[in-house]
Image (cartoon, rainbow, N blue to C red):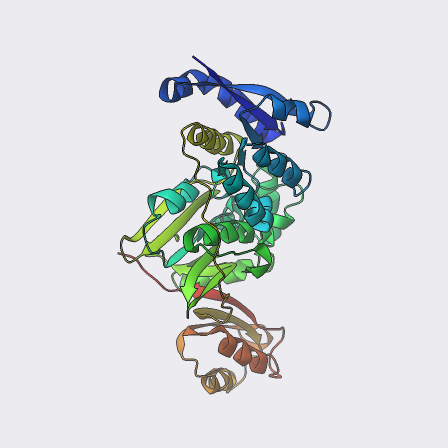
Length: 406
């Protein structure tokens, strides 16, 4: 039986887990593919030579992260007619087209299941299983760290900083969690999913994104009264002849398929007229889980033909989309407050769905959920409300997703 030589770039948490898993599952892979995978070399900051590893490999696994030298190594491997497997979502989101072009020109495979959703096979489903479906929308929870933090805030009443500290202690958040909590990580993943689902060139800088740093325990407590749960949701969808790709905190009603996805789990819902909707869910982080997705890509690359995405088509990015909103106001409790707020909302054509009021005197708090409206109209209303003299702090707001799938 012939061997299939795998060069490994990076030997951190995921790289070490992949190394161990490849050795453990080599016999099973050989039984299903007819070739036995084996490591031909490992590159780290202190050992290994890339040129030697490349010469000795049929496929290169890139797990070093970052943009450089990951981009250089991936391009050199592809142009040398080696398959490449990567878990690097920032590399794919910012340089995907360059890498896809190189893979097509060389006739080799570029696979990246582990770059989006951990062990959840959303890349393969969108790129292959649903290749003939006309996908209208892909949205989901694609960052396990933020989902864990928001789950803990809802479960225990903890503040954002307390829940973040728990996530770091348990290994769900890095010492520097910036890319996770500010939405950058999820935005890169949604750029990749948008590229695959819609065939258009979508880069990270075209994704509008927000994080969860400003979410408070009060927001989640009020939401519970309104029957809502809070998630960091990424969305890529067709809107007005273009695409909208965005990441932001959003409240969900209990009937939404993403509402019950808790802890560090990820989930992605794909909608198309031909399939209605399907939801994929599973662990979104962890060395062994990511390594499993990487090995799955290696096995796929061992089974020709190679399947890099088709060349991208130009797309129009749509920014002003419609949504319901949650609005939190801290106000002085005096007559006419609610009436003035409602009047300013009404001037922008915004109708109120529900209201919760708490507190008295100088500690009154007003929480409003409005019916769906264009974001520009809602922000215009918030700007006007923010000038009212009875507000004690600037208004806070979060989007609300109203869909309920049956």
